[in-house]
Length: 401
Image 1 (cartoon, rainbow, N blue to C red):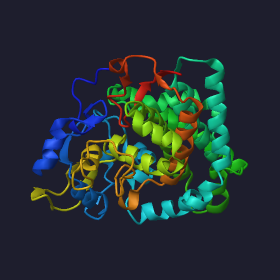
Image 2: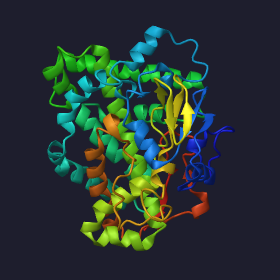
Image 3: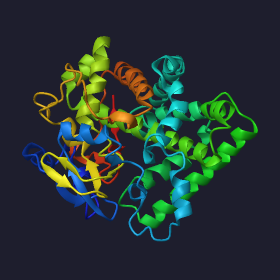
């Protein structure tokens, strides 16, 4: 198994599927502790479900706009101008009303009605990749052959990004969100990603297509600065394949480890939706999202946090809070996990949640029906978890059938 960096922020520590026991103890004791944030500065860790909801729902007191949330350790050579460029169009780095203005332009493209129009194409993409797996034969790496390419192809088509560039941007993103990678490498990759997307935006501005970039240019070109377009598109590309692909890989492993629940997903169409919600809660692949910064002195769980401090929300601990569901450490797809925080909460609730849900709703049962004898091709203790990444998941998932 992959070893994490020597110093792993507490909110990112896992034992395979589970947050470490220390996170649970802090939550159950109602402790808000000062911790290493992974950004080279300390902050306060919030773990209880109700407290995390409070932080995520109050941008006036817990701001996303402070530039420290987007800094890297030893980020001294980044000029204020470059930081401003990085933040332009970056929805996760904005508070209302700036955030509201940009999100309003994007929301129509991510409504459930609009996403339903993509369903036939997503079904086609899933079936093509299952055909390829079957044709190549077992054993196979389910991450490389299924979990990663499907969301990547969907978001590429939605945005208008050439799918032939996927190896380049997938490698770049994978390293950018790996906190074990040297800060200078992560900065270089971020600059390369910005340059890549700037070229695609320039192409869309010259000849807008029918994809989302073309729509933004046609309908909002007078309202959006070029740098904002670049930032929006970059965020959607990264988030659109990193999160769903890791849910597909890690979610499949979770079901393989719970065969009776896997059988329900395979055989009972009505169970697919509740299973997805429970997997989202139980796996909580996004450890924390963007740290907030207090704009005033605040009290959380009886603890006073001064103004100007980073606040990190431990989503895996919050989603395993007994205040949310009974017996929270047990995977139970029959309960559906209403109210989980896997997609965040409040104004920054994940814009692409309807798309992610649809991709999983199609992909999981299709995989399990195509390969009803799907099983691991290696011993469970050899599974390679992505321990040092800001989005949790698997490096590979060798399977056979």
